[in-house]
Image 1 (tube, rainbow, N blue to C red):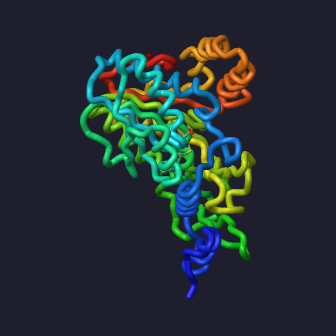
Image 2 (tube, helix red, strand yellow):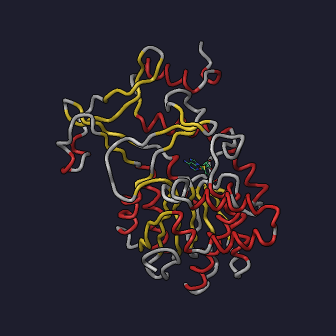
Image 3 (cartoon, rainbow, N blue to C red):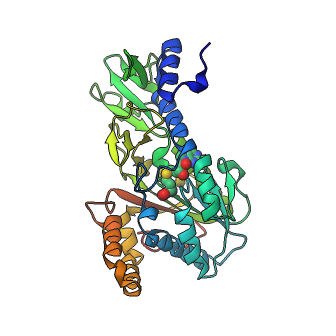
Length: 354
Ligand code: SAH
């Protein structure tokens, strides 16, 4: 008898594929990331990747100010809920809540998080939070102020590929002991937008059904309960073809098939599609702008200067963080900020629909 618990995730996938055939990329990515996040803290210098709130406190502080400004202009409704999806170490929340408090905003705090290892850390950084496995148990009364930083990119994508026999789902099979892409057996042409059906062989369409479902749910709540949301991630603002799947381990890009469950699998976020979903539920799309422009509009340069004046010994470090968050060749352009708000709420600083 084989003890499945003793097998690594890669070997479990190999057995599954040998027994029942190729698995969808969605399945492969979903299980890989669930496994990856369940047991470890991947953030920071000694981990696999670093995120904006871990680079500098300025990031979370400005988000807290943005949320407080929205809430004050909307009439200071109570109860009000701060909701964060995939809060990592809780750093963004603790910086944001500290700066919001100075403007009288002290919301109830809700974290949607599936990783036990990260929950344990969040418990020490934000002890008063309430944890949820998914959005369904979030409160239904009172506006929500929702934030998700580098969350959507970790959700599993689905890929379709144009083969000589029409469109098929992209599956993960085996070539010897190595994972390899194969085309699925089921015709998928009806799932492809009409203008792409005749695209050339090899064309790939990537979608993220889980992100679409989350946007649908968030937008429905903004419409019913009031509130606003910020989704920050790397991605594009126009739908396009091609695969953006990548894996990162120890700050290096690696082959997504090399070590399932041991590297972070991500894909670029298709903000254009997500904005359309929000609008279909009567929610205002404030805009999708670059992280550099948004942080500058919120005054990150002034904030950096005042921090450096207060602590001159950290001046270089603060300047380096500012560059990293805003410069075009760093996170400034690749990362986008999408703002949404209930149509009864005002526009927000840094967005065209202000
Ligand atoms: N927002 C944090 C962490 C980003 S890493 C930061 O900016 O530092 C991605 C986060 O999403 C982690 O907290 C991870 O555990 C969580 N996550 C990934 N997939 C998830 C899912 N399906 N449901 C809930 N949380 C998830």
